[in-house]
Image (spheres, rainbow, N blue to C red):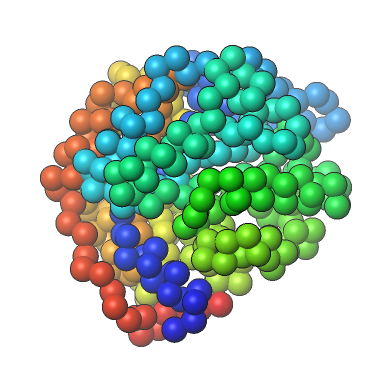
Amino acid sequence: MTPLQNDQLSLINLRFGTFIHFNSATVQFHDSPDIIDWEYDHENGDQPRLYPFDPTLWNPTQLDTDVWADMAKKAGCRFAALTTKHHEGFSLWHTKAGKHSVAYATDKRDIVRMYLDSFRKVGIAAGLYFSILDLTRGIQRRKPFGESELDYIRTQITELLTEYGEIPFLMVDGWNSPWGGPSYKDLPFETLDAIVKGLQPHCLLLNIGCSDSLKGTDIIFYENAAGQEAQNTFSGPGISCNKLTDTWFHRDEDREKQPKSAAWVKEKADGYFPKNINFMLNISPDETGKVDPSLIKEFEAIGKTLTLPAPLTTLPEGWLTR
């Protein structure tokens, strides 16, 4: 096997993980049930943005990332990802690339470090999510993309992959899609992969929504919550992400709704595991950093319901490689 295949196999053998959505949208839209999780109609012609975010509004007074880690551990999660920066562009670490970050918030804690420390402490492989689309910086499909934009992305990825120790994977999003940007022509996969592998050779680059081939990702990625499904003949390596609530980021209405059940999770995951597709399940803390008790309860029930397959020792027949 190649080094890349070894890293792919190691990640697939983790099988079950969690995806933590916690960022500016948590604050902006928690009480707005009719608005999507981010400023979807982001181009707005030549008009100003509809929903710019003021960093001083970031103040998660009840945040305890150890609670998140404990919740994930009780569910049986073996890997995790945190939205270090979502499409709006707010950075949960003290980035040197501009002032749109927690460094300029009311609560200036480095959420990335807190998350990594908590999840590593309980033995969960902690990776990071990073949006290529950045509405605050103006990195989007219908705006010019050049050296300045590439330098901004390179600076932030370099911070994430040099200041926090070993990162098993970097999950990217908002790239080469009808609603996002930039295109693969403006930012080829090879360019971004070279940045990542040049910093951490064993850090897998996972491209959300890249479900056609490994030419644009190290692991085929299905956003199942958006309707993306694998073919029955697929044999890996893959990841599928889903959620128990209606939206990725917390909404106040979640407190009044029953999340999907542990039985639902088992049925979904049992369909993915034979195809060598890992299953990621979302955690959505509220604007204070707390997770709704009903979600915590369901994660605990999942830990008592879900059975994970034995680890693979060799690449399956028909395994897709780049």
